[in-house]
Length: 271
Image (tube, rainbow, N blue to C red):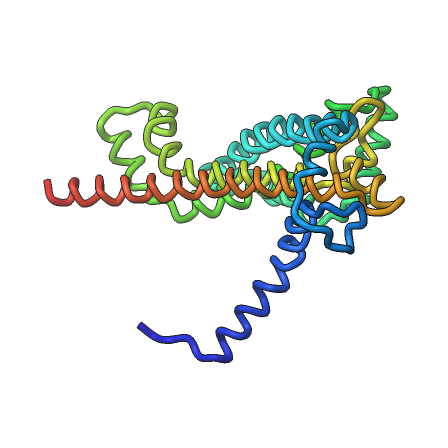
């Protein structure tokens, strides 16, 4: 095994520190006993107890989780269908226009996307709130799911589908019983990415939200404009822990599926 040089180790350490040191500082200061977030006053759970009494912050967190779960599910469904269409239906008429429209939100500035959705909702007379934010986040995240699932389908071994259909399995049943389980890790990864993007979005949500649908990023942004409160560090730490646990569970499930598929392939080759 090739050993890393001191230069490579230093570069990796600096890169990881640049990425994770601010998060570590935020987590540490969420346990700060002092009200001043820049002065360490000892370890304490004071601000977590205070957070439990901050009804506005908890409502914003709950709204963000519901919007993220709903928009990620819708984006995963639509993104998977788009990826299947691009992969399985070949060079149909309008394919270039279709793929351009699907991938456009990847490069579109969020300000333009948010403003265009705001104008659309106003023109349709739709009251802005929970559902408009969820629809906007679905539009934003669907393209990311399409990219992930499409990359998995491109490298997919089509002979497995052809073998199932040669044995008399209908196309829809082949997709549900052969294709879908094999691309499930990519779909799960797409859902996780869509969930994280929705949970993190501030710009589009600020254009499409309304009374009673304040998301957590909007709430935190409004709070920090007047100064960073210790409760903000506490709620951010809880959200980081939630996302970290979900990511670890997803990684373990993906690894378990890969091991199971490798074992099945080995047994099949042996038979």
